[in-house]
Image (cartoon, rainbow, N blue to C red; front, side):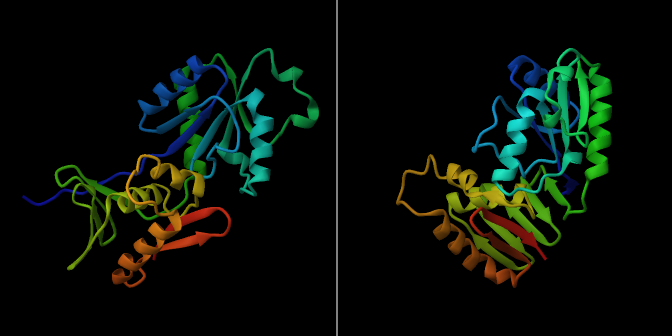
Amino acid sequence: MKSVWLDFMPQRILILHEDVTISRLLGHALSNHGYRTTIGQQVDERTYVSGYDLVLIDMNLFPSYKKLLNKMHASFDPSRILQVENYDSFSSLPKHEIDPSVSRVKMPIDLDVLIQFVNEMIEFNRKPSPQIQVSTRMRAFRIKEIEIYPDHYEIKKKTQTIFLKQVELYIFLLLLEYMDECVMMYDLRKVLADHTQREQTIQRYISDLRKKMSVFEGDLEIKTVKNKGYRLVLH
């Protein structure tokens, strides 16, 4: 039976709100409309910001979020931020902390209206990227001519096949999830958290991955982002 490949590229939304109930409500509503959501309650150096298509953030956390972006030298794109505020709270925010270029919604808000607003922001900021496809029957992913079979730890291109170790596969899938974007070292190290065998550094695993991927003649490349992490590039 021939494998059927379907488009599969969920948009990623980070929800940062002090009220966990509101976060869960927003996350549930957005997930039901096909978005992949991550919920957080604070902003600190562990907050991974560059891998999301939209950040929905509590007004009270926004100043810390902006400072974090500046500290990380991350590209600060206000058009990808949706600030949530209460009807009675906006006027209490000091003027120097108000960013007029950031979109805002006031709570409470009808969820259908919120979803429509999010959809419009996502479409406005959507960028062209290699289309990832999925085969549910084969339990595999495909990008152009490259096929990834996680259950078998294999990556194929036509007649060429490479076999990965378990941790190598986990690292590769994380880089694949954020194709063309920098994955921070902190997030890569989390992949090794439960790996109890022989100690190896992220750099060593990346080096081994690069050697194995060399058979694809540059179609897939892992690039180093100096002092930050790595990104996977498809040529």
